[in-house]
Image: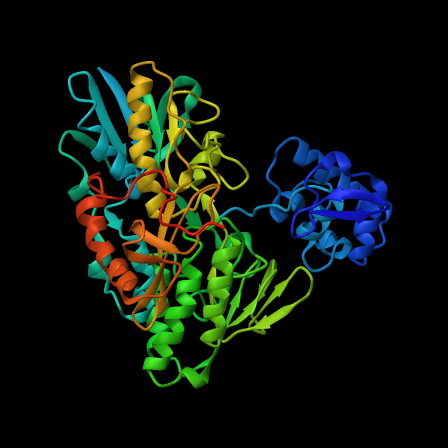
Length: 102
Length: 411
């Protein structure tokens, strides 16, 4: 399905995650953050860039891994992206929702 | 003579010994299996111990009785794998060389990963049921518990058998109903996932059942610590859930041997090719069951399907042929729902559990994703199948290692 984000037509899945990262840019990220009631600060951007880099390197994301990354600890991750930080932050970063596998 | 060494005589390692001794025979091959333990446990039985449905005798046998005579069983502690030298070092200083290594060392609970979890309330009001000792301690507690807040909790994924905590909640509901005290027990299911399960269609069916049974669900809960003083669990966002009994599934990790050997990821799972089961780092090392990091369920049925494909791949490797990229993540699990009923789910890497029939399209006799007595009978029969068929590496008729899509309702 498609959705208009920051004036652009963007392909998203039924949960609102981008399905094509090449359609992401910072204005898209900002609008998705606003939808999640988050004002992006430079700290947020550091975490988002880190998540995108991990995704590019095909590293499976988990709260534990983010917490051990040296980029942000879990407590701060929660304060930056309250409630469900991994789900919220990956959506804003334009990358797939982590599977948490099974 | 060449050496094939299997590390771990649990479900996966024992099945591999049974499969391979027919194929790799002396004097060309010597198969050795190493495990320091004396007992083989039917781990799915841990779920039934707390409710006095199974006794310890039902689920414990000796390791020896499942290892073929021509396979050498070494009951020794393994100190380190040296994969660059194709060598195993044992704790007592002895060394073993291998031509092919199969890692089947499983996964274990690691309560120490969460602050306060292994604290002073451990096995008093904080329990696990993924170990024999934990399940028995919980049984003793439940026998004369007078009621209160029962919290069933998952720390983080992946865990062995992701449906077991749900089954625990369902069986608890049934157990307290039988004891005519369900009204005295408040059951809450706490999960780090957004819903009852990882896959949407099964989540919907399972949440419906939780609701029907009056079990509360708290989702997206990433635990920070267990507060032993106030008997609450607290998440990173500050959310608190009080308990009188906490039944938790701690973080699961691979064996510490992987850490000592430098072969594991941050949870001690071995990086493994998900379709061939070959180690990503060493061509002559194969990984089966819970020891691997493949994104499949950590359930015995998965190890069973893996064993059939891995046996073929090891024979191909011996003959220098390309490996089959065939493992599809197939899992097949009964989910006890209490009151003598169960669900059955069948899924793989790409297909989530859906409704339908199993193993025969349109006929069943088992129904997928629907509660039935027949499924419950299947679950109970499985213990016999485990000891007598599955561990011995005998193929279960009509159940294939890769998943069949027929008889299933994908829309």
